[in-house]
Length: 254
Image (cartoon, rainbow, N blue to C red):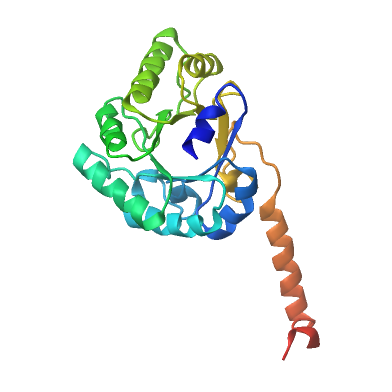
């Protein structure tokens, strides 16, 4: 499956979305190349302020659920902050994630120093997706990256080191158009953008954001529908039916 993703480089856009459950995974699986069980669940599902509050047990449980709904897509799972601080722990925890969820790969965020972690995982035959730019596990303050010549050079260098370490793809989060374009052009592995322009080889969004369920709408999110409004309308109708004794009618009774 990894080879299919690699072959799309410069040929066909790679479609990625997040899922934290069987229900969502089974809906998006048909139209995705990659499904990510992201630590964004911290904000989206648990109302946590930071993604680094996600635990290994949490990511595994949601990964197990998403696996049940994922048939054709590549299933990638985020490694939570603190689970890959050194090569030994990274390998142990990644193997646990793979064993318990049967996912295809793990994703780790770059702190500009953990290239040996990626290399160690790859040498242990664990597929790794990298992540540069705005990395929520290591940066609390949001800002667009790669807006100056110096920062662009640093991002390109970081991306090349991640590729050299053996990652099969790399997420570019909130990186300027010009920097994203140059990074994508200089890498042999696919880039997956989020807030990083159409120059990337693929795109990823948090599914809950694009369907209007999370209430989080930064500049880079296009809301394709308003599930929040649809659910509210359904609940309102249900409430009125119960109040007026229209539900449950004979059709919904034994």
